[in-house]
Length: 212
Image (cartoon, rainbow, N blue to C red; front, top):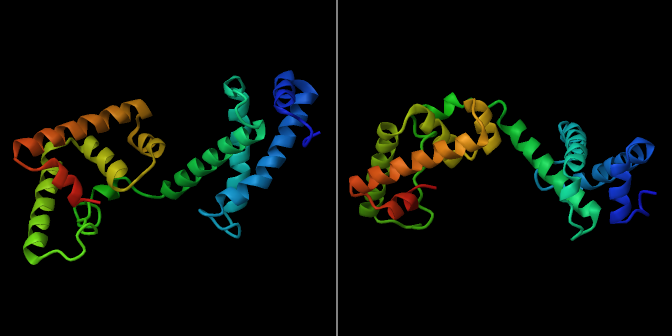
């Protein structure tokens, strides 16, 4: 039955409950387990011991999301394509979470060159000594402003998200807040930095260009 269902039949079976729903969920799980390894291959090798548990966990999470959001499927694609998109997103979210779970957020705040925004010279591959000195001085000014202007929580959020690339969900969990509150915290931090840069006569575009 797995390969014979059209969109309407998938929806009907998944909404039916009982044996019909159980069979449809089992078939969906099989399709997800077949498709995810190909989709995840750019990010993780299938020989990695974490691979199978990740795929199985993502498959389970996908089934739960599908049941919760059945009414959102609009039939613009094959139902199985819609499910596969959800599965890939679930797997990548879990992969990012596992990557960051052993990273100390406090460690990102250590005042050393590795954890502060790096000097960006890619746009200027052969800078003159004078230009290099200007960039280094500007970098130090921006770092000083970050340290002086932002609260510790704002700095933690800014460095984790904007500098280190930590996923929003993981940063929110580490900071003991939710996604919406973290958006607001980051927005306020950026606004304060912008105001301080302007007050000190620092070009915002050049400051952004200086850091990667």
